[in-house]
Amino acid sequence: MTTRASPAILIVEDERIVAMDLQQSLTEMGYDAFAIAASGDEAMARATERRPDVVLMDIRIKGRSDGIETAAALKRQFPISVIYLTAHADEGMVDRAKVTEPHGYLVKPVKLAELRSMLEIALYKSGLERQLRESHEITRQLAQRLETVREEERRAVAVALHDGIAQDLFAMKLGLNYLDAFANKGSRIKKVCRELTHAVTQCMEETRQVANELRPVALAYSRLSAVVAEHARHFGKHANLNITVTESAEFPQLAEPMQLLLFRSAQEALTNVARHARATAVHIVLRTGSGRIMMEVSDDGVGIADDAASKPRSLGLLGLRERFTALGGGLSVRRTEPTGTSLTVYLPNPPGDLTRAA
Ligand SMILES: Nc1ncnc2c1ncn2[C@@H]1O[C@H](COP(=O)(O)OP(=O)(O)OP(=O)(O)O)[C@@H](O)[C@H]1O
Ligand SMILES: [Mg+2]
Image 1 (spheres, rainbow, N blue to C red):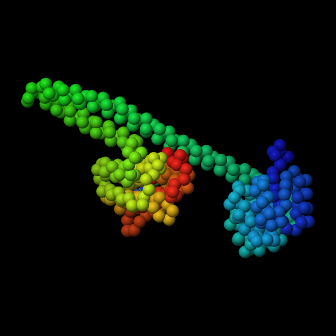
Image 2: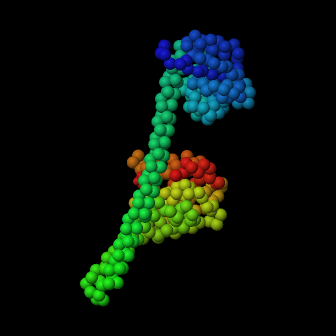
Image 3: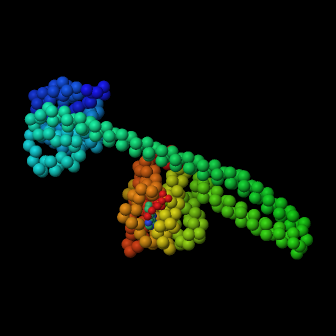
């Protein structure tokens, strides 16, 4: 035996003598068979008090639910392994049982050597599954952290552009105006002043635009549709897309982190249209319905391929899906008829914990 803590086993069996016999054998094998439950309700109560590593589940038990229903309910609630025990292994039963993804299936009377090897395999596999769940959770947290850091950096660069470079450009423009006023009419100096003033004005506009793309300050106080429409106007011009934005009357004014999340989604969706869709028009709709706040971005392009959203190197949709799911919402994407793609992101209405959105 290794030095691991004794694995916790819950026995769900309504024949008292059989259950106690099993419990004793398991204890002798070094397992912690900590409880016996005679019904589904009792099994749920015992598992809630203490989470078992493995449940040995008789399929035919007394009470409202049989062993298969009980196992399904337990697995929905806890990350546990199930081994079924039954006197009759008919095909229909096996078909029902396999949907609950058991780690094994033993026919009664149980042979102890078989039980031990099945338990060991179940424990080994559940250890691997736990590691997988943990590493998925770490990846999720890393992705969230990455997103937060990106937003902080965008905000810092936007502030530097706005408070530093934009102010310097403004000072330069004032200086040029001053020189212009002193230069002789029609002189070479006056012409250069005018050209430089034009270039500096353009530079100021571009700086303002870049700062705004990085972090639209208007998100804090404007309607989301207005900020998205402003982005769409510039984006559409460069990408040669005709973009419309509509908002239904009941669409709520959201807190800034939510506005930012939806704005980033619109940016990603439009970038995707420009990169992948070969579309001419995009329609963005902000609306509510079925207890949800939704944003739909539909284009008239070639249509997304069936397996596109799961491309290993594509992180745009994956990242958005993670962020919306973490807030109780989600993302769906589908091809539309006769052509095009429609992407929908949604949040519960009213939205929950706002602090995790940014
Ligand atoms: N509007 C669209 N029309 C057609 N195909 C699309 C559309 N949007 C996404 N796709 C497809 O879905 C894939 C996944 O999109 P996703 O945004 O996740 O990744 P990406 O754009 O390829 O890369 P990135 O990680 O830089 O966002 C794309 O590679 C593309 O094939
Ligand atoms: Mg993308």
